[in-house]
Image (tube, rainbow, N blue to C red; front, side, top):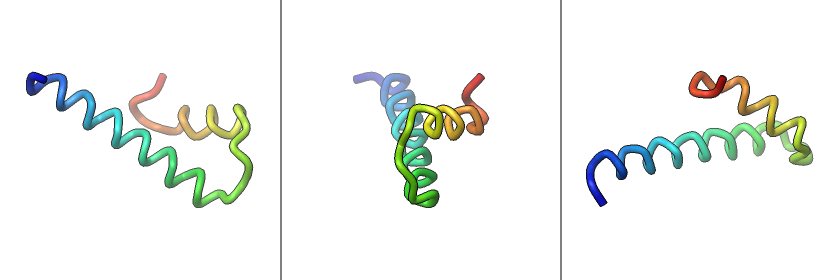
Length: 46
């Protein structure tokens, strides 16, 4: 795996972890609407 691929994978994992943290903070069911709401709040999305 080259450096660029490792960086992209790390960035993707960081985003995934932020989403998971937000879902745990909300302590509510993970409906599609809730997940989309959280995703759209991230600066990398849109």
